[in-house]
Amino acid sequence: MGPEAISEHDVAETYRLIGRRPPSLRWAKAELFLGLGAVACGCWLLRTEVAAAAFGAGLLTLGGYLALAGHRSHLYDAMTRQTTLLRRR
Figure: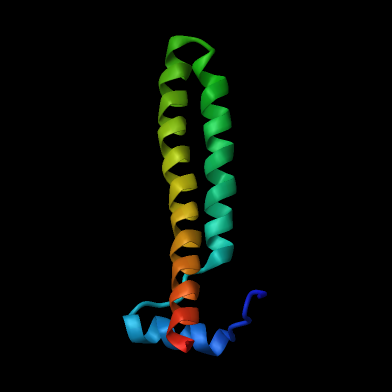
């Protein structure tokens, strides 16, 4: 029993029925990579002097938020695709 293919038309129809627009997954990937980059820079700055460490803590917080927001967009899209598959049955 393999995975069933669902069409993009079906997914778009599901988004229309729930009253949402489809997420921009390119932007979600950009959020993930920018967020993870900011977290890495923030961790590096935390090891330096006090003034830079405060900026590093801010980067760590902002980067974590961006990475989680990108991940959440991918999760919402995956849940909508599962709903589409169940709706087709």
